[in-house]
Image (tube, rainbow, N blue to C red; front, side, top):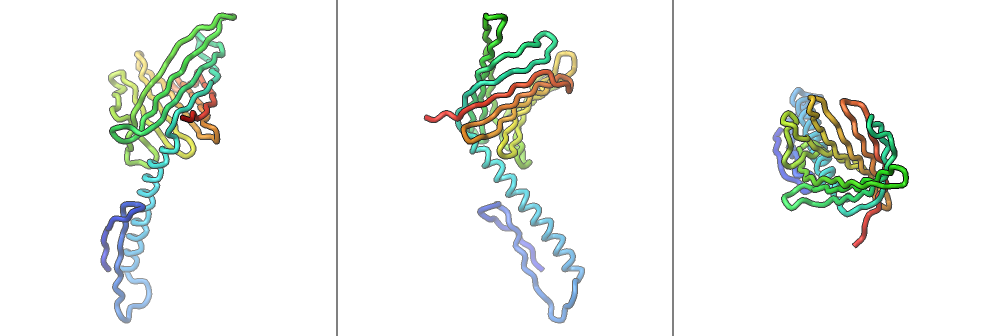
Amino acid sequence: MQLAWNACPETKLCLIVVIERRPGCIGMSKENVILRMILSFALFLVAVTAEAQDSDAGVAVFFGRYSGTGIVHSKDADDTSMSLRNLDVEIGPSSSGGFEVRWTSLIRKFDGDVPSYMRKGLRVSFVPTGRAGVFRERSPGNPLDGEPLIWARHEHPTLTVYQLVPSKGGGFEVLSYERTLTEEGMTLVFRRLIDGVKVRTVEGVLKRETD
């Protein structure tokens, strides 16, 4: 029995096995049992590698610009109102590898008939982690220093970005942006949790822009 690893176009990893049968051998020898175990493990590794590559490449289907609106449902102690947001998202390849997500929100709040406006936005570059469908920020922050920790997960047709934000009192906030592809663009579900308690959600619909 001979084992050898080689490169394959689809998975970049193949196991080549050469079996030498001995005349007069009948039944399952100890060597064959070990061989089957090795083959099973090798096939598992190849499958995981292929899955990781497919997942990484699959993010490209999100590339483009999207715009739309969202409705905010808030349970904050100082804000129990419902407000609207204009949403813009752009997802594309990063110049240094991986991919980049940029989004802005124009928040419109109403106090009677008088609206007020506030703009928020973020731009983050992601690179693969080696785990299928999981990406980390290119320059990750350190929560112990008060910096947010950001990562992304791709499980087609949804790309979710998470932010772990430490509070001054030692607690934490978790923000999640769940973007799911549709025929015309994508839907957005945003959630904000403070110390594990959900305090705000945003549900929006965005259309893909065409050049």
